[in-house]
Amino acid sequence: MRSLALVVSYVLHPLWVPLFLFLLLWSVDPWLRLQPAMMLYVTAILVINAVAPAISIYALHRRGALSDLEASQRSERAVPFFVVMFYQMLGYYALTRPGVFLPSEVLALVLAMMGSLAIAMVLTRWIKVSMHLLAQGGALGALWSFNMLHDLGLGAALPIGFAVAGLVGWSRMRLGVHTPKELALGFLLGFAVVRSFIEWGGIP
Image (tube, rainbow, N blue to C red):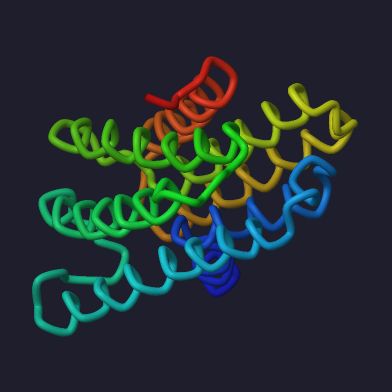
């Protein structure tokens, strides 16, 4: 079962979830399909935001700055957090430069990812917030909001998102990385922040 937990943790790693989420939204949302070139551009940015931090974190591990690739020690999590935030800020800059016109909901989603990560960075001083469940909560919050705003008819499928989040939570507990409290906090934080940004407007 540990092998299954490892597979789930790596396949649904928080670095990949935003990319998977966006591809899913693109496939089901007719509003997004109206701008294929722009959506390809966003996809390219999200690929970079997944691969570049992964390489950087691996390099930190190889140099001994991280005891493991999961940054399972709370005292070691600040550096990988800042690495991910740095790439997210670069991505946000690329998505807001002159000549790039994105749907406000998509830009709010990107900003929400940065906001939830920033809050988790602060909370890490006291508790090891689960990044895996932060990503799962954020993804489900985004699907919930896009479904409501664009009338996508996904209501019956949304429980699958909770099931996937539960599977990821099980994998993290099976690996001994997080407690139920840390998992629940990550999920609720991601879900609440992403929904609030998309539905209430997170664009400055």
